[in-house]
Length: 313
Image (cartoon, one colour):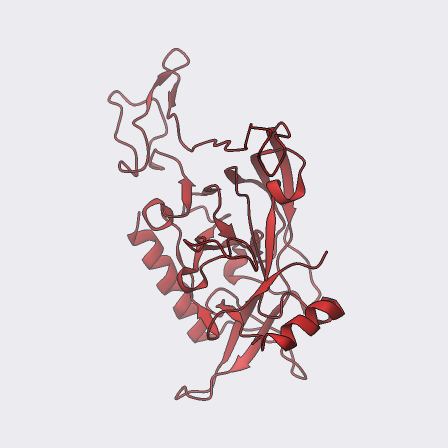
């Protein structure tokens, strides 16, 4: 069965913002350490959490050899239980999986002709969104591979840094028949978090039930393994709903009936792109040699992002 498609009213270019509990609260929960990095031994006085408005205060645990913060993120199971539900009351159960996410390579360039100094922009196209209508879903990074050794068409982040890029959108308040309960693309947002940076804390994310989100996006040169927890009942449309954005990941994958319907409806394939130019050091442009040196403008934007991110802590 072909996936439903939607398109924004106009092409959108998203610029990621730092991932913080406050900024992400409308879409779910950011899971982060409640302790600052300077606490290396059991403290005589238990401190307030790093994010006091979003984290419980730690309490002693394990004979005062640890501090426990609970609950740190919700585990929600809203699967229907009545036999009159669309899922026919298939029983749900907790599910723990590992998603090994590889760095995205479908990054492309376009020229910014309006800039006083011509430069190349790196962009990532958003092709699909998904949601889990009845369950939370938590992505917790816990392992990183060695850096990819090459070849040159792989993209490398500055100083071998790895990031997770999170794209989220709320559901439109009024149900729609095509597709049902679509994402509200006017309020889509992009968040970015460093993963293997010793100077910044690693974070996990919990998507709230019904939050539309892109499949996990890793940027950099390392594979990232995520421990993923959620509930599921084995009914495809209960566990995960998907919708193509614009032309989707690849226009060639569309079936003839979807193409015909789009033509009849006057479907406009406006796209959603994410500006990732400040993250990456080099790129391979069509018919051009790979850039090997660090771009001054890219490095400057990278530092600007890091300063903004740390200012949120």
